[in-house]
Length: 218
Ligand SMILES: *[C@@H]1O[C@H](CO)[C@@H](O)[C@H](O)[C@H]1NC(C)=O
Ligand SMILES: *[C@@H]1O[C@H](CO)[C@@H](O)[C@H](O)[C@H]1NC(C)=O
Ligand SMILES: *[C@@H]1O[C@H](CO)[C@@H](O)[C@H](O)[C@H]1NC(C)=O
Image (tube, rainbow, N blue to C red; front, top):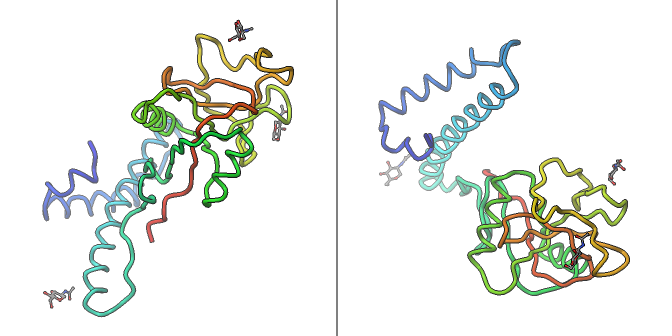
């Protein structure tokens, strides 16, 4: 169930029940020693969802008051620039002009973003889907993943390590195929046709996926 969407239908009584639920969660439902990590994660997610409902409620109350008393206006949700995909608290943009990997990284920086760092399946699937939707003959988009510094050690542009990979299985990637040049393949693309990642030579030119934080809640 999507708590946020269902709240409207719950009405005042549902709201009261939710408040009790929030209270219960924060007072008693802290994780216990026997909890598995999965249970802890699920609990944290539930707490976050409830907090965000509470946040929206307070924010709406504030906005109503602020309007009448000329207090500063705030936005009650996270936002992405026009034409950017909103995924969780992140924004993604598929730019279709083509550059090599380094230039693509610069292009993202120029607009206050960075080449995409896809850390969750949700993000991976969202950009793959958008790539497919945009369509055209180009199915490869640069992401901010490279092993140029040390072969086989795939690292994101923010220097974080790769934990959640979605490499192509058939053909098996990354393969550092030297057909495109002796330096092999040290930069990664998402392939919107196969919904997976490939390593390719960094000198090839492709469209790119830029990413930035969504404008925070407050
Ligand atoms: C703000 O003003 C409107 C119209 O003057 C009024 O109906 C509303 O109740 C006021 N809201 C608050 C929170 O004071
Ligand atoms: C891989 O690269 C990262 C970032 O440059 C570095 O911190 C890490 O130690 C490297 N890992 C290995 C196994 O070389
Ligand atoms: C490298 O790529 C070429 C051209 O796409 C292909 O024919 C060859 O089988 C690939 N080599 C490996 C080891 O996958």
